[in-house]
Length: 231
Image (cartoon, rainbow, N blue to C red; front, side, top):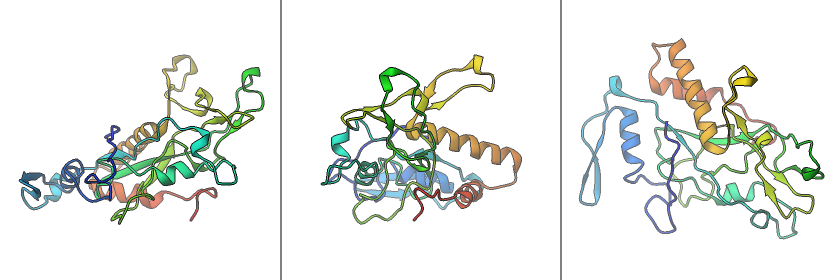
C-alpha cells in the first residue's frame, strides 16, 4: 500500500498522466518485473513473470488547504466537485497496473454543539469526498483514475459559507469494535486506501489461489456507483 504521493508541477513529466520514474517501477513490479533507467529511457529488466506479480494499492492524493472561495460557480454557489475536477491525481498514482483509490463519503453528521449551529455538510451522502483528487484535469490522459472510492470523510460549511471545518464526526474512525478502545480519527484518500488494502487482504486470505491482478479486477468489478456520483 502506498499512501504518500507527490504533486507534478505544470510542465513536469507526469502532469499528462504518462509513465515516469515514480510510476513506471510500480507498473513493472505489479506485473512481475522491474525497470532500469538508461539516460532518458525507462526499460523493463525482463519479461513479466506471472508468478511474481503483486497487487499494489495507491492513494489518489489529497486536496490540501481547500477554502470555499476555490469551490464556487461564477454565480457564487458552492460546487464541491470543482476542486476534485481541477486537482489532478498525484505521482505515482497514474500507474496503469496499480489499484488507485480515491475517496467518497456517506458521512453527514453535524455536531450537537452551539459552535456548529447552522453548519451543514459540504457533500451530500454518496458524493465524492472534498479531499479526493481525480484524473479529470490530466492533459491527454492515458488513464482514468481513481479506480475505486471508499470512505474518506466530509467537511462542514459555515452558515455564511466562509469557512470549511474538518470535524472528527465527518472523519473515519480507527476504533476497535469496543468503543472504549478507540485509537484516533483519520480521513481523505489515505484512509480510503487503508480500507482498500484491508479489503484486498481479506479477499486474498479467503481465496488464496487468486492472483493479485484477479483480486484487483474483482474489487473494481464489484464497485457500485452511488446515485450522487453515477455517470
